[in-house]
Length: 298
Ligand code: UD1
Image 1 (cartoon, rainbow, N blue to C red):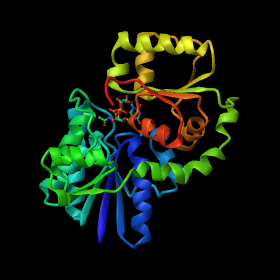
Image 2 (image 1 turned 60 degrees about the vertical axis):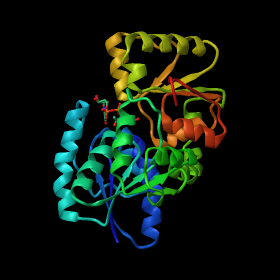
Image 3 (image 1 turned 120 degrees about the vertical axis):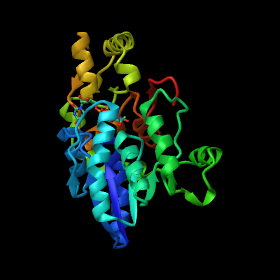
């Protein structure tokens, strides 16, 4: 049995790690292809080190671009790889552009596709991720779901029962695997934070691409920062918008993107997390940390 994993962006990597480890334990041959959708070390390479998995076997270095450009580049570059390798399964993760692009190419080559984190729905097609989820789930032959409501959504959309397998949330497997190492980083204390901090992440286009909305969020964060420490690792997309719009974060502590383990060390002891990340909503739930979600639907 040979499987080929395709990953590309930050939220994919913690989902890959437990699947990779489990497959290795039973002697399955594996190849990891990184599309290069994310390329900054803090959004990519650092995750492989933190998660204790080998670097990808191949990087397609597609880089950034509009949705069409990025998706097309991934498709062009992954097609010859899949044609040469012809694995028994192509495994794709989550809902980023790399997920949908790889699923489309694999399906057309007649390769079997397994989707890890199938069936999640926001029912909001203005989110690029929702389009990616719908496309990927239609094409996948094996739908590995994190939750029972995901099974229901897939059945409602007409997916056959024998393709849907409830496996639970692999990102939470990664979380508990990494927690001792995360707490050993001393990251929180290096920032002088002792458990009363508000941890913020924002990167959704719906929040950061609108000047009005981003300004309102920044105002709210500045107000909170008058009362208690607010730590905000800033995604590159958000950093660009803050700079272009000339927004001042006041007392909010803006950091460069931080590593997976550093983030866990912050989150596990946070007073509250304010985020628009789907993954962090799940991680805070597993850790019993309050989470305020900055989204219209979730
Ligand atoms: C992508 C995913 C999103 C996921 C997020 C996590 C899609 C459609 N979106 O959004 O679901 O939640 O990753 O981070 O797949 N950039 C860098 N360095 C990098 C990568 C990107 O500076 O390594 C900058 C570039 O200017 C780029 C921008 O960030 O244009 C956005 O990157 P992109 O991959 O298009 O989408 P994300 O917002 O990261």
